[in-house]
Amino acid sequence: MVRCQGLLDSPRQIGADGHACWTFEDPAGDSVDAAVAFLVEGRELGQALVFVGGPETEKVVRSVEPLASMVADGSLEIVPFEALYPDGRRLPDAEQWAAYEAAVERARDAGFTGLRVLAEVTALASPEGSWRAHAGWESYADRRMPEHRMAALCCFERDVLPDAALAAIASAHPVVDRRLHDLAPFRLFARADAVVIAGEVDAFSSGTLRQLLSTDDGDAGDRVLDLDELAFVDHTALLALQEYADRVRAQGGTVIFRGGPPTLRRLAQLLGVSL
Image (tube, rainbow, N blue to C red; front, side, top):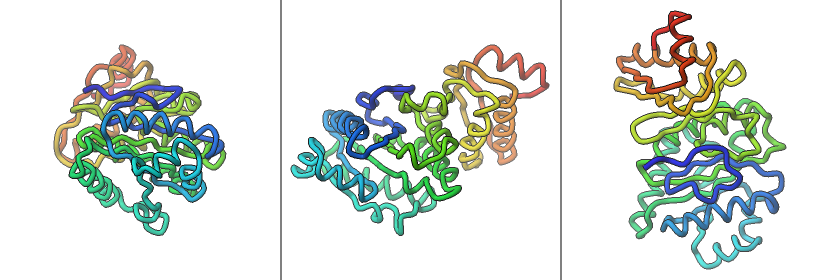
């Protein structure tokens, strides 16, 4: 199945393995419509619905309709923030994913088709410098979501995070709040047997691409980068792709580049880069 991807006005139809980055100004305002659209789809798909987030957003979920009714009737479970993020911090990637994977299995054992997580995680990305690691975590998790039928709406308060943070974090999601268009011109995400790069990558965004590619664990094995939805690429992006390929090959792995705009191959020839 092809994962939903792109810049959207609402996360209302992103699928059982959807992964969206959304922003808000007011927890009780513009975030509610997005949350409801996301949760309603999950209920229709038979997924277990979970909320995890900071105290202010949790208060909204417990008091604003229709979210409050979903909590009251048990269709939306509130998971304490520190139950998933001890001391308010994210665990190492593999450990953090194991916690989510266990939650998916519990949902399936209870008769649900999968898990859908409404996550307000501004606090995990807001301490100085921590957003870089958080963007890496989002990319790490995204590559594992499709095989587990897990969906997530990751919400961030716009006024708290700098533009560079929003750019990196959003680019690690297949679905992005359309209001972040200028900050996230490309998206890197998992699909079937490949990692897809969609959109445009230039000198302003190639650093983000390089960072997200670095989250690959680099072990031996084949990698496929699907570039069919990459509309534009410049020499800085080409060099980022080459660095990634060289690193994987040094670990005994292989990288296959699939598709891509005509300019990519032409640039590679001009610069003597082998992809």
